[in-house]
Length: 186
Image 1 (tube, rainbow, N blue to C red):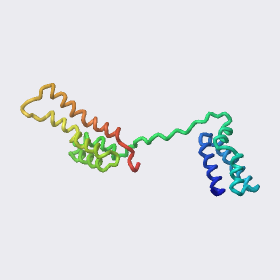
Image 2: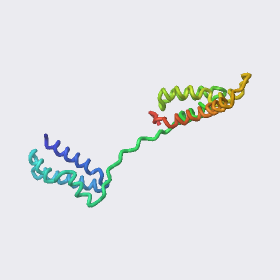
Image 3: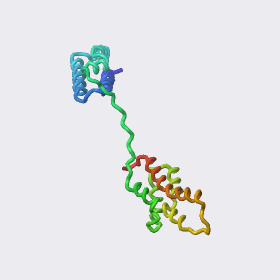
Image 4: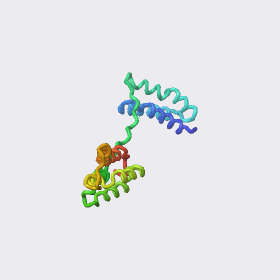
């Protein structure tokens, strides 16, 4: 291994070990150690064996960081939380056009379907569910209530059917909002 690679590996290990330190202390530590290495090289530590001895005298990076912490409680960095879905205007329009778009000359519902299917936010399964669960949105509830078929459903069938027709678009919008993953462009 070359002298430069030995030093680079040592400094890299030191950078990783010093990550929990406050930024100012971490910078001071790196400046001190690299200055010490530069002085040793200038004083004649040019062979691989000389550099190995010099790095061994410096000590293990973990030990150097422990000495530099001076009793600080070091906190390991936490992984970043996954990004929360950020809905664009077109996805928000889907939430309104699917259940209520039929009232905009029926074109609104089809526009909602178009926006749903052209979005990269949802899976194909979610798109199919939204297409079939919210057909014509709340207009289907209105049609169900006003159609005279010559008979009425008994209460034990009619009430659950009406509740299902009312709840289906709301449930589908909630499912789309919860399952939406971040889109490719924000």
